[in-house]
View (spheres, rainbow, N blue to C red):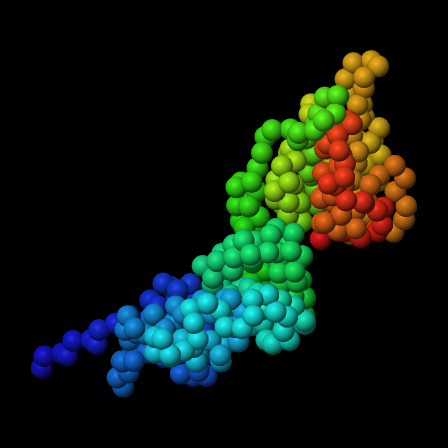
Length: 345
């Protein structure tokens, strides 16, 4: 007997690979919200038509933007011109207590929920789009403080509570946050020193580095991107920089400031910070020395004489922008900075 040809369309696995979501997510959307394939034959794999895939793409776009899945499904299924507009339903940036892919988010921006859902379903394309949109719409500072950090912390809490689960979610989200920050930095980086009206030479660049043994570099990448947006010359050395390498970098570049990031108290090295703060360079009579900025929660627990301690990313940006100005330049555009015990995240 001649075998009948398989029905046209894509299998669930093929659609999942195309959209960057898991087959389990597609089956869940079908079961809960009716976002399923139009061709169903008993004994065969379900097949998704091009029209079905279009609906799924809209579902992915809406949920990644923070729209609750049930509402996103209604909008995605609606005939063209009869449902919600192509823009995200609801007010952009509004705060909400709805679900975020099972992550403990609390009262956060709507964009956090979309980012969390995209992360939990391992939707790389949606993660990239959501992060780029957040930076474009809100700027690097607000995108970091109000979208990226709350979602990263929620994933971290879920990871801690679930044992070995959600590690892949945290890794994927962190990688895409890093990519968005680096993309912003690359688009705004400036090698030119800041302009000013001072009579002296411009200070050296700001050096950013994690202390030896410290691998948490995302907050430094946010600071790097923010300084680039403010056209502050900056050198990023990244994670776990050995002490001799830090000393050599300071000696060779003559920086206006050195930012030492420490996530945990076990990595914070006060002797290293004091040593860098005491370094000098230049000819006799015109020697310079760097301002050392102790950033991150690892430095908490006691006073840090002679070191700067910013409260957060905004405070760190204002401090470093002021330190990078030439001598005698107008400092009115750089806001006040406190000592504090906060961290740059």
